[in-house]
Image (cartoon, one colour):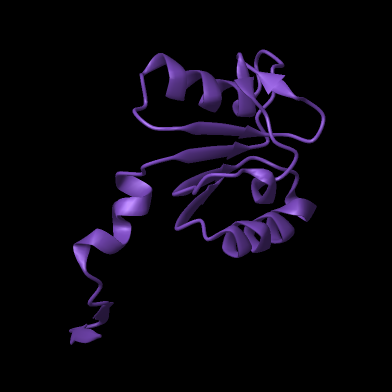
Length: 111
């Protein structure tokens, strides 16, 4: 850690943010087929803008969303997940982050 006037600068290697800015795979926790929702729009944008890598929708109420296999929880995804978008009700956020940590997800974005 480096002190600079009144700012604290953390000495993280640049690759430590690769999970957020250059993810290899993404989970959309709270994905849904319902039009007009954030969970649908994020999933749609990843597909529409041709994210290069696996995309994993997560929602226990659906088996397929946007023609992609959907998983009940992030822990059920058989492959590694680099970044997870979390779009769940406020009361479920901490449990979802705990599941992401248990899965080994490197970065999360909470919406």
